Image 1 (cartoon, rainbow, N blue to C red):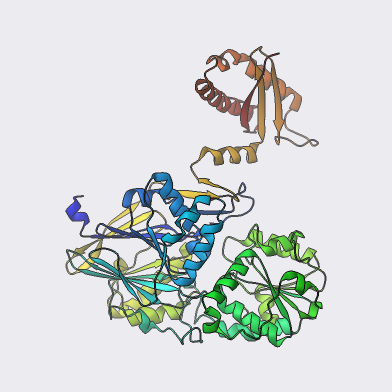
Image 2 (image 1 turned 135 degrees about the horizontal axis):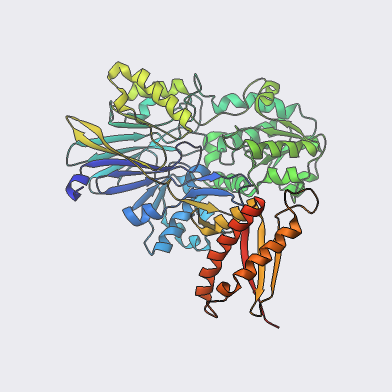
Length: 592
């Protein structure tokens, strides 16, 4: 494709967040102007070889498209959690990192992350790259592309939708990206946000990218104001200590709990670094002044709270999804430095289970109950409260209908959610859109790695090409203190050792050999093969190839290659003999 032709194309590619809930990242390309949006994480199961979370490997975006700006829509971890990876990848490539644009609360959370991220210590130097934009403002991203930051409602303050306008050589292009949104009639900072807020371009934008997370659920989403009575009932009727866990960045819910605690005569303490940071930053930014008057709340340190009667204590905890190092996880394990769960304590989940977190959540709830705590979560908590105790930040089907009817978009692309949610949103768009001529060819489903290209044809932007990557977009695997690429052989070694154990072959230049097996079979129990006989066969195999293993002499590089080939061959030999395929490691001993 010629450069002139590419300048007349609108292209969009999701790198994460489609077919999954988390790791959100997408790339808009208006001709030659590339605009990445969001950089989030997806939390991993703690059994996944020590991986805490995953994010997109941003190497391709940075190296291929060299974006000037990277936009963040709001402050949730699945949208900002991997921001430091952007500057780390830029540094690795020797490229200047893009400017990171975010609303004020998300920007504040990101700056904290840049100061503290142990995986990328050098990220601290790039904190000044994070720039704040005001809701309702308009910014020129290039000579012919502008973006307007549209105030929207979600479960964290300062959330924004994006309205892009491209003055292309072919025809003007107008794009609305809702990001995470809901239509909430309740009071937040300054009233309500209705569908009219999205009419930046009037009617019929060329594209509507719409949040699909709750598209399967009928009706309207629950308002944040509607959860207050149920939470107040569960807190006020408790006789002992109360622990409430929630998504850490939900300032509205924190404000509600502070007021509930004040009315119940309870003091409040925060358990979890993320929650402590959110409370401090929200106060510094004046967000509590805009959500609810919390001046009557009594927030104290953990030691001061412990001196009070249990009936006067309320602890707000992070870890509502069973995250590995969260406060609630440590409470369930009896490892928290400030709090110990006791019989009579009540733990309330003011949150929703994110799909994919079923196993860690099950372990978390079981751990809390083993400590003697009363655990209220899911439908049981709602029943006991007499109403909802959690409000989702995502629009349900009726809200999506309202938005569709208001904007009457020419084309719709569902985003953010598992495939069934994307499909439900697409079906909803087709049903509603029939009233203004929306057809099946105007509603596009995609998955991570798919690039959709649109060209101006016969008075409209039409899909001209759908490119599906042969591989899923690269992933960065985030461990506690470091990160690595999903394609790194390091992970293959961990998988092999986890599934087949480890076989260590110790050799010396005098011809001696010792074989030891770790994690390959239990100390007791029946096996389909004789263990000692298998070890003897392995020693015989090694002796038969001893000359090959020492062939490279003292040249380390040559020896490593021969050892890798021999390790694979030996692993296959063991697999054939026993059904086990271990990770094989050669170890050279000094000669006597």
